[in-house]
Image (cartoon, rainbow, N blue to C red; front, side):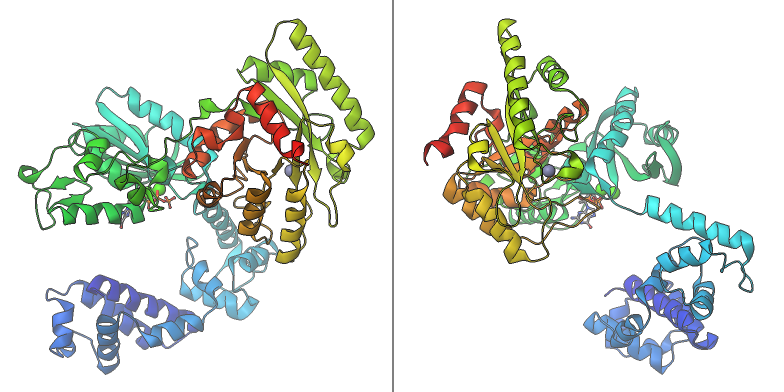
Length: 583
Ligand code: DGT
Ligand code: CA
Ligand code: CA
Ligand code: ZN
């Protein structure tokens, strides 16, 4: 542990002691100790080894012993015990603007507040204003600060980050002094949830670009502004970083800031094995850390960096150290699916259940935007809150779809609606009998009311998988990103059952779901299980989810052939017949 890390821990100990109400002399000893370390000119580990910590101003026995323990073992028992003795919520409260240890302690002692949630309650009940030294104004400020923290410090679904980033990226592209620019980080890697947005630009005029960036319309707050980098808050509360580099550095910086960290570590290792050094500034002929331009191995693009390290280009979505290096060495990286490969969606709703649009409007719209087909899979009767269909209404809908398709045919259109159902997986059975399911083009089986028992949920889904009329399982775990945890399920067991029965698994492209998770598709694929990228559309605009779903499919290493709804209509119809023809 280096001196900055040690100083940080001493500082934190001081704060924790203050939260506990320890005597101020003890508290101050740690804070002063941290400061003394920061201005130390000698290497700390050398001083520890020579037992000379006592020479540092204000370092008594206790402090010397603790610093020595930290430097030599990287841990400190006293610190860990102290931390464990204080409610985590109290420490978290310190993050709220305007709250120091004294105020947090006072509210804890007098109001029993030990978390941000309780603090909010107490403020709303007007109890904080009544405390000595607080008052109405402070109380209001605390509430505002809580809102701020929630809004700004949280994580974001990728769709929100994409929307926030696009106008900024366009504005950067438009600037005459920007040579190249890109997003980087988790957004470029297409993670389902991201922390902050990273932008990268190359220019000869970084100060000007930074200034321009901080004044763009989507920017609501500037957190930091330097000569070559800046952090801001965008509308919607998402933090965004911009770094500006020279154009020669651009590909290296792009690779570095795209990450992931895990991927970068392996890349750096590969460089070292070849007598090179890779960092955010370049790839250098050197055995030590450097950024000396004379040693640079010039690379005009990321692709050239990969080639120099004897790898084919690795798509950003695959840069998670999830096998991309082994596959790359064997030249077996997948040729990833493109969203334009998708010909339609096989799980969607209409105004017959909880969707917005009529069958006719859906057909017209999806035809218009270039789909070849669109399945209507409204809810089944058990989903009564979603106005699920009973067999009688479903049979009526089948007739209406047939009429719409007839009309399309008469007009010489190739687009078709497909009939279907998102049939509920109930406790002992499916919501429809097989004779009903047999009348449908597409059957999606979904578990909407799971139990709390993993084995039971798994059994229910496997029973659905084993039904010869079920084509695919919808939104496998029921998760809603940043809102609802997945229900308990042995996903691997369900995947195995799908493999054994020729059942497909949906990749639900709704950005709250992206379910099944991208991390499991490599396994599913290895078992021969096919994917269906579905919009689960409830209105026209949701057709746009296809693009997002394709991004997650890419992240799951999927190629066109792995995804059923890349098939043209005739081939799709054959595929839909396959499982039921084997009964
Ligand atoms: P996020 O923002 O939490 O969703 O995830 P990222 O991956 O965008 O992470 P971020 O914004 O902290 O940093 C962007 C990239 O910069 C990251 O993917 C890899 C690179 N990077 C940042 N810090 C380090 C580091 O300490 N070591 C290495 N090797 N790479 C780093
Ligand atoms: Ca980031
Ligand atoms: Ca960042
Ligand atoms: Zn559903």
